[in-house]
Image (tube, rainbow, N blue to C red; front, side):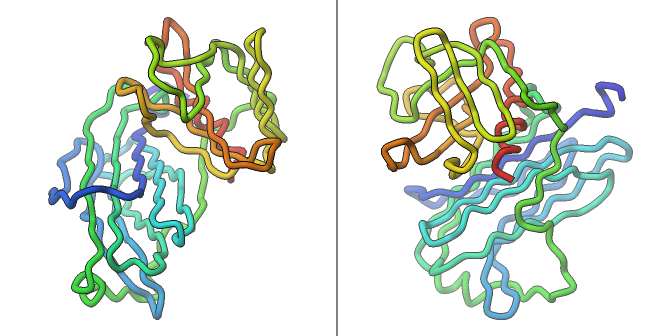
Length: 264
């Protein structure tokens, strides 16, 4: 299969608390049409709905959708292949949404290596009583992409990625973006990072979430952020990314897909 036929657009939407509401229109894209995020309801269920349409006549894209709202809203995530000229809807059920603020992060890339970013789309949605009252009523026939859909490029396991940068989520300020550089092995049961000085094992059963996102004290890079329960039974988090050519190779996409595959 040619590289062009494997070209992918990666769309990441993440939800978290935001400090202010920002009004934005859906951006124009060469590859897809991005709808405006809005509230909808089906029966007594209220959810955030986002529509994406591929405008390509022959190329497939990938949409990585990651929605996280308040602590009461379950994490919603997908990795979905977008077929040419097809439309898709993504829905994240909300609980006690009134008054919450949701930051939507959208990034579209040309390929699965997460290179050549076309645009950034980061509106902030504040859920008001007026928005709830005006929520679109969606029929049961209006199907959305099933929650948790994950369509990735299969990577034979165990998969070894080197060199891989490592850092703790709560890493303080430093001259380097990373703390260690070593080998990351993704197997069916665990993540294993070894750099000669330290060894970190994260069992699959202890992984809570895998996201592609920026981290504090590093404005230049996005990281594959793994949040998990450590050996002390506490919530913990670490970040990984490709470290080839001092982090400029930009091949973190395959690593993200392999690590994210553990959290289907």
